Image 1 (cartoon, rainbow, N blue to C red):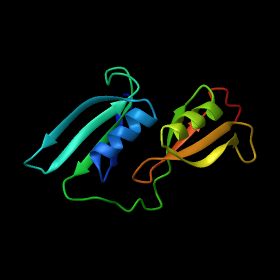
Image 2 (tube, rainbow, N blue to C red):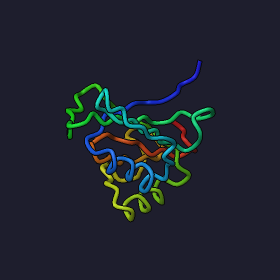
Image 3 (cartoon, one colour):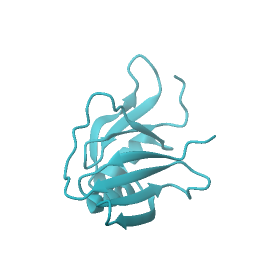
Length: 130
């Protein structure tokens, strides 16, 4: 078994694709409209789906927002330098919701960013100790 993808429902497909590709540097792997079901799927990631886990963005036509609820946590991305990644993300229009720094009660360096729909994305240093 392997993890294939994580699915997120989005309110504006173009805005979400722009965030994941232009702000976070992922690649749009594929996108398809399903007129009979009135939805669009797009898959983004850092590598092909055969070898990497990716994110599935789902846009249900006519739905422009969702309640995130209290069960969702975050998606974690490993970055070489959390501080530099935040600078780059901010320069590309991304929203940093937790500035980079050590984890509370630990030493791992992390930060959080938010996508256009409010989903949290954690940025983690590859040199984690916790």
